[in-house]
Image (cartoon, rainbow, N blue to C red; front, side, top):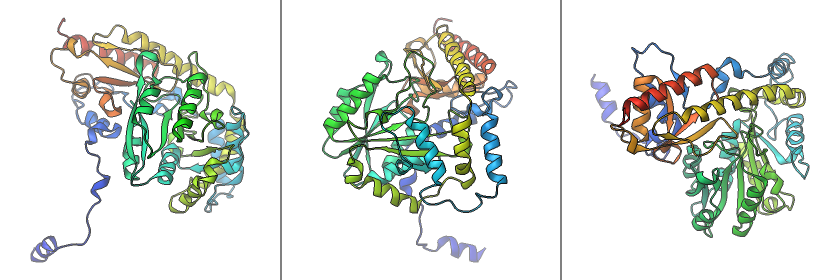
Length: 423
């Protein structure tokens, strides 16, 4: 005991890095999720309905294709991918990604334009490392993915926020982009198809985004992790289409389209036909980042060519059709829920933003209070809007088992009726 006292009272030279702590953990997706889980009533024997985060692979209706799992198994059994991969990534894998993405682009990508990363998040982190600087700022969407904000601060980029317009199907308010930008702005981030809003930008709107970025002299970083997961009127248009107008970096992965988020394979791709990114050292800096970060597993890289080349269109069609049916049911079901409105019908991705009318409820303070009480009383998990930048909104993930979705909407309706001023 005496020796223990000496140890605890001794002055030590190390400390935890307080800059890594999020100011309010409940405003992040993971923090809010943990808070909601902790409020589940253990005496409620009903199944918990998880409509707070996009993890469809947990449900049998959203399993990946056998072509993908066979490709992984074949790569492992081949014993050709047991060692460290090349720093630049395995060439056939980079070539396969370049060919896969080039199908939708006017300019053919080369393997040198593709940098393989451990998921879309690490791809995004890589470009922030490259752009980071003590005086620089980056423009982020509101609502948006909260990790952008956290990662920007980690790499000494001041996050500034522009608005998305719910009354215009969540288009970017380009006037607000111009208003928050200045001479220290390095890039703007867009998400298409949209998380958390479920929108899909049109070709015309994306062209205006590119022209605005060109006027400001900034890079466009496009998160396209939900690329081709679309089921409305607007087709998916990759931002790389407009790389001749302004420099573009896209980040993406196999996680959403193939339903394999746990495989951690993603990519960062440069769209730079005019050589601007190369001229300003961005390409070289991306290459340097590979020496201070981990690479995707060799066997996953080894499986990429077979997966991208051989996955059948009917797998994608079946998956998207199921998501469409869930989105339609969610949109229609919300119409009968008092105090909750959905401004736009989702057209892509796996979630949608709905607005709370706080005047309807007699004992709900805000969106966080709503979600905590919903979890406690109905064992339904929804994400409070504050976690993605919009207070008194909710993000509903509809890409779950259809029967669970139907049960979740019924419980949500019962909860809102019970807490309504007019019961």
